[in-house]
Length: 75
Image (cartoon, rainbow, N blue to C red; front, side, top):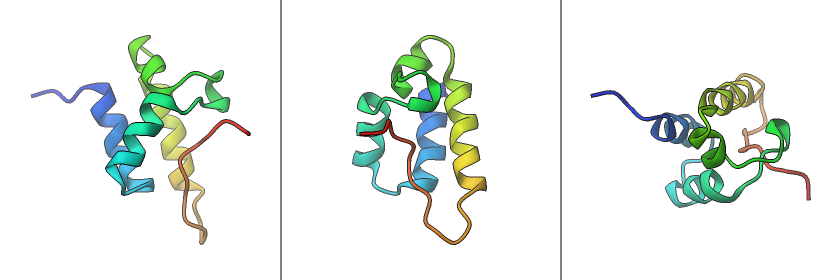
């Protein structure tokens, strides 16, 4: 069975944030400054979920010694 884009995003996000509740909140409500201020869910619904996956892979690649964090819009 093929995995949906939101599930794929969640699986990558869980490598950064192990709390499933936090990941769900992030997917639904956190605007991503790097992707035009849209939420992950909005981007996935508009066929742009792969952009979120690329962003998350970039976060994982740059983690270094500090624990990675899910991308957020500046407050």
